[in-house]
Length: 154
Image 1 (spheres, rainbow, N blue to C red):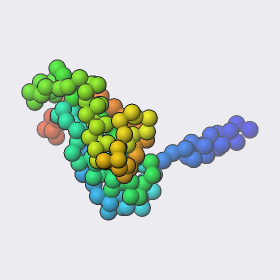
Image 2: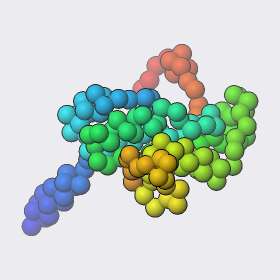
Image 3: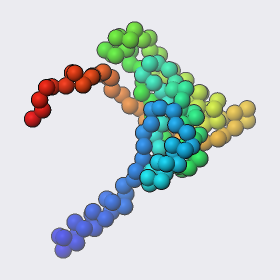
Image 4: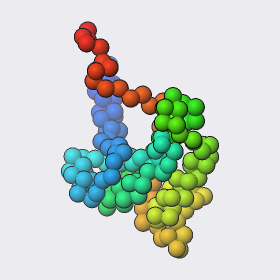
């Protein structure tokens, strides 16, 4: 009986898994067609950069992904004022609400809507693709090189 429950749990888990890709560089339809061939069922595209600006590559990447993949989300890598990275780059970051508003407006002007958002494409900017949601990736970016790694690993 226990073995049957374990097998059932494994089958349910496998049935709920999905393959997707998170891209922070510009991609085209051929890239996404290739990923779809590798069984990708969702896409995650960076829409805001920690440099304090929308990701200008995101709209082309989202539209390319939408040509072959139905489930597309975006993620913001926000600029965090006073973080070591922002300080090291001498960045001035907008507050969180402004970063989100700039992102939604930029996407809407490219004809990309976000489910549940009050900022949507208009007749002047017709809908071309829809993101399911926007995720927030909050981290303090640390730049390391191979020379920063320990000389010997256990």
